[in-house]
Length: 254
Image 1 (cartoon, rainbow, N blue to C red):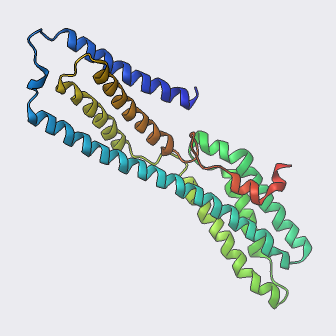
Image 2 (tube, helix red, strand yellow; image 1 turned 45 degrees about the vertical axis):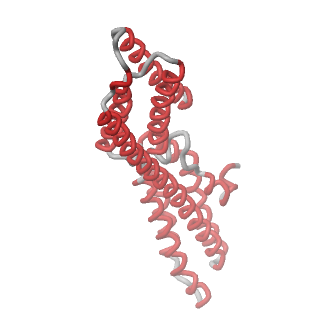
Image 3 (cartoon, rainbow, N blue to C red; image 1 turned 90 degrees about the vertical axis):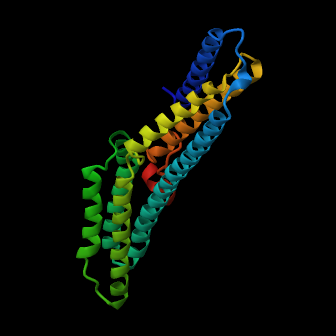
């Protein structure tokens, strides 16, 4: 099911539930009911709870967006470090340079064509990817520089492999959902409370009040969906992509 369809259904369901409860509740109100009799303290509490919940929603959105941005930076760092390994190893003999380049390409190809989907489905990295990166490290580590010029490139190459390995580890840690379950519990319960409190204000069946009640509930549903969509940086609609790899290693797409 499309995520946009899920969003549309969630917003429509939230509106329908709120409007249905409002209409049913209004039918049960007697003719002598005065909507202006709502105590001031209820209006104040409703406003304060709405403000607090809005702050919590804002912090949650900022948190998942930061995690999504960090995931994109991690992918770029990993791809750039591997690109540097390929380019800097050109100072080595052609056979060594080709071996390193081929193994880097094999790793990148596996990440783009296999591991990315596996990471999205299982929220973890593949063992094969770990082995391929270990082979790249072995290629760089085991070569013995033949002169000072090659020796000067050895440590920077090892540093770039270490950067790629660290970025890969960070990518694996961010492969799953980043929002703890207890936070989701608070967001959902808070949303239910925030929507439920609007019924304490004795909403009447006028078009304006029904429209505002529906829009309020739809907005909360949209914001919760937005948090859920950002919560898994590598697997949902607005997610980090493998484009840094394909940009720096176009040959793997052939």
